[in-house]
Image 1 (tube, rainbow, N blue to C red):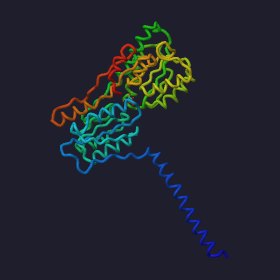
Image 2 (image 1 turned 135 degrees about the vertical axis):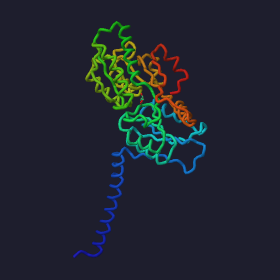
Image 3 (image 1 turned 45 degrees about the vertical axis):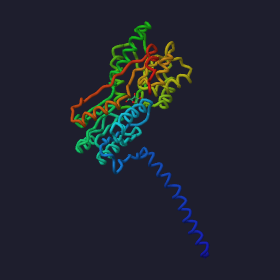
Length: 350
Ligand code: AHR
């Protein structure tokens, strides 16, 4: 027969053991679940009392994947300040549409006066925008577009012409090859695309594709997403360089991916940029990338203008006064090469 003290010990250690196991397992399960869900986002709440004359705006930003995105966020935050008469609730969706939908629903339940949002992809917004419309909250879409059945679900859109950006890249390449006397040569092209389904990816791919289709000698070897990030682009580019040593042109749909791709080319000892074996075409024209344009390491940079906050402010101010607003506002954009980069670098804030 077992003695009572032994049995007691067993029960005691048994309980301690279970507690230790639970203490270890619960956090692991929690972290695993959070990772699976992409970490539930905390949505900033409006304080119980806001100054009465402030206009309450909920802003859902799609993420912080690029230098351009940081500049776009700053542009909205700098325009919708308290001094300008706003109370801004900001939310970063970390690239997840679900997080954006949650943020928009939270803005609706907090009864904000306006919703501003930069959609990560174009599709999938009908239901939540219908909810905002039913709640009587005007929605201003910025940067990328939404693809909805009923366009009255949003009041206005302010952004860039992504398809035209793609065309500009194509037209630049046409002119460049002609100047080089290579207009009839076989040209092998690799395209690093951004987030699949986003306006920037769809538009730039289509725009460049239309020009490429006019040139039977342009061959797109591969068109692959690196999600608008430098790290992913470096990884993707390493593999591309092994598979396509014959690559002549890199079209990289944003500057962050260009930086990653450049690192991979440097590692592989590939000469790129002016006088190199690979012509580099980038999009965005952020400060760091423009420096590389100035040095001739990026051949051309098609601007994507992130300074959109002032227009959002203007749209809201008009709506406040009951004035009509346009449905679509397109910001101005340039093309930068070694010839003009230095001039525009002066005073460029992003
Ligand atoms: O939608 C604009 C694009 O998104 C920019 O080109 C890119 O840098 C960003 O992440």
